[in-house]
Length: 137
Length: 137
Image 1: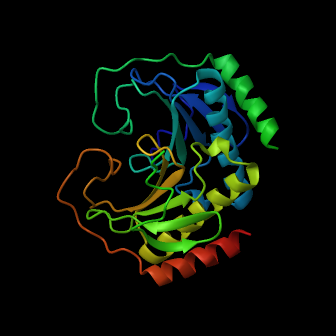
Image 2 (image 1 turned 90 degrees about the vertical axis):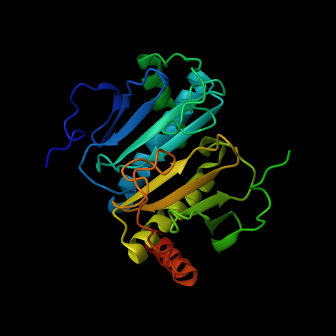
């Protein structure tokens, strides 16, 4: 099977360990958008062993905490769909009241041209993810 | 503040404990759609204490497991947005290749009229959530 998320090609990796990676998503309207990808090709959260499930969610929530600390968004959106690419990954999206889609999801209809809020600095984001993981442990 | 999720009014509650509840979402195109609502008015996952965070995610994933067991969907979609109602809640949605929005999210554009797949029986779903929680413990 030809899965685009199995190889980590053409990705800007922000943070990684042996099990998963956090990448920056290339989205003009939402530059702060990050994705957490489980390295192994698995489809659903409930296919993971309990310890792996916990680890992936810890990384997702550490990414949420790091984005809140660095960017102060109005809201965080979390989602795991996999309808188009059934390889387990999470969207972690800082949202702002004046962004292109608010209060719709970023997959919904645009509401306005929208303000574009800067992405986090990748090095600062990696450090903030490490700090949040240490605080959760 | 007038939050529509603080009181559990006009909800079909499938499962609950002292901290959160699983309800059936009234969605004609996606009858299996469930929502897991944290009872206390909190905005983000990272606002919860670690034990509460873990508990809520355990219930979300037990709901995923229960829906997979009973309905055999092609995919599960998980999402926590809160842009419209900033009271912590999770969408747990069984998805089918022939449903109205697949492979788009249910907040995206409709792709077709779409097949309507039955919801789970509420009593069987409550039991399956209990079983999944016991298996996770």
